[in-house]
Amino acid sequence: MECDKVQRAGVRIMKTAEYNPRHPASASKDNHCYIKMLCAFIAAVFLTTLTVSLPLGQDSHGGADTPLRFSEDGTFQISIFEDLHFGENAWEQWGPQQDVKSTGVMNAVLDAESPQLVVLNGDLITGENTFLENSTTYIDQIVAPLVERDLPWASTYGNHDSDFNISRRNILGRERLYRNARTSQMVFGEDAGVSNYYLPVFSSDGGWEPCLLLWFFDSRGGFKYQQTDESAQKIGQPNWVDHSVVDWFQKTRDSLNAHFNRTIPSLAFVHIPTNASRALQLDVGVDPYTEPGIDEDTPLAGQAQGWCADGTSDSDCEYGAQDLPFMKALTSTAGLLAVFSAHDHGWCFKWNNTLPGMDFTGNGLNLCFGQHSGYGGYGSWSRGSRQVLLTEASLAESEIDTWIRLESGDVISSVTLNATYGLDRYPPTADTHE
Ligand SMILES: *[C@@H]1O[C@H](CO)[C@@H](O)[C@H](O)[C@H]1NC(C)=O
Ligand SMILES: *[C@@H]1O[C@H](CO)[C@@H](O)[C@H](O)[C@H]1NC(C)=O
Ligand SMILES: *[C@@H]1O[C@H](CO)[C@@H](O)[C@H](O)[C@H]1NC(C)=O
Ligand SMILES: *[C@@H]1O[C@H](CO)[C@@H](O)[C@H](O)[C@H]1NC(C)=O
Ligand SMILES: *[C@@H]1O[C@H](CO)[C@@H](O)[C@H](O)[C@H]1NC(C)=O
Ligand SMILES: *[C@@H]1O[C@H](CO)[C@@H](O)[C@H](O)[C@H]1NC(C)=O
Image (cartoon, rainbow, N blue to C red; front, side, top):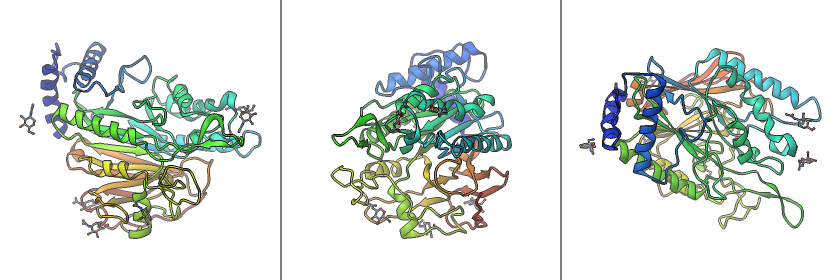
């Protein structure tokens, strides 16, 4: 398998980085070896690029002792929960009851699926309804089904995760009280957002070269924590991936690829979709047979919506185009197979053309939404969770299987994101509601 080949190359590279493992990478799975090999990975990357902060081994949390890895049968599955919106109207029944029902969705999906990682793709909490003294404690409820199953998870934060009484930084702090939290922060500028980081996924055979990189981006939005302007109004935050993050992504991606001397396949997660998704929806058109999935968020809300080109927030400005550098970076990333967004919900679209207002061309990147998972927030579509299944073999072919598991147990919108996605015909997705 491709990953095996890669893994042998990795051992060589680690030796050149002056780490001389006592055991070959695949020989032993004891903890001692784990930690040593992890250190080797960290040291290797650290030597290459001092600007890269690391997802592993920084402290006692973050699951440093259990790196993400393809399972023994060579598969790696991700379950994406998005727009859970915990913490609606705490002062009445509608709210606390939604949270109980959202926990039910997570339990139903996780009983039916066997992921190695859960992604919480933003809007974990409805921040505007929270109280200062306990706003982040909703994290405890959200992660309970994951802690029970000892599943690692990784979050991106959404526009509702920042408000007067809640901050992304404090949500991260709450998450990191748990050993299984992999959410991290690798870009530290004041306006960069928080959930910008990557996670490596290693091969099934115990090797320590990443077979897959998972990139998480913070599309920000919402309001500043505990701040108001002269007229006592909450202060809005930009709703696109900050340009400092785009720079960090490109540098980090390039140094990882250079260090491992290959293009490492990757997936990306970001709460708010880019204008490309909007343009595909409005200008190209979603075909229910070739891009199955609900398509009722029309027009969908993309990054930089409601901002002017000069960076001022103004609802008269439809779109400020500040997501152009991010889109450019995504389409120029070899090996990036798909970007999973939330905020809106439904289909996957292969972006293979030039869209209005852009001087660059989609490179076949798949842009996917998931299913609304929470009972908070708007919309009454059947709740569910997008599943992403990779195998070491399919990764070599740049193929991903993905489907949506509904709370009811039904599977919808099951597709293969391969070279002919967009041409292959599938049964359309029924438009079901709660
Ligand atoms: C947070 O505090 C509010 C107000 O006291 C309360 O109604 C709500 O249930 C609390 N939420 C949690 C998760 O403890
Ligand atoms: C923030 O929390 C405080 C303290 O619980 C509460 O009194 C206030 O109403 C909340 N403010 C907003 C804007 O939600
Ligand atoms: C990098 O990989 C190429 C083939 O893909 C190979 O020719 C070259 O020798 C490798 N460089 C190093 C430093 O291993
Ligand atoms: C953003 O999408 C809209 C809707 O399709 C389109 O009219 C506009 O030209 C796009 N802008 C850019 C810069 O891509
Ligand atoms: C892509 O997957 C679909 C569905 O499984 C299949 O019909 C099609 O032949 C595949 N295309 C390629 C190029 O493998
Ligand atoms: C892009 O995909 C569409 C189907 O979604 C297909 O009709 C078209 O030929 C493709 N274009 C290119 C340049 O591959």
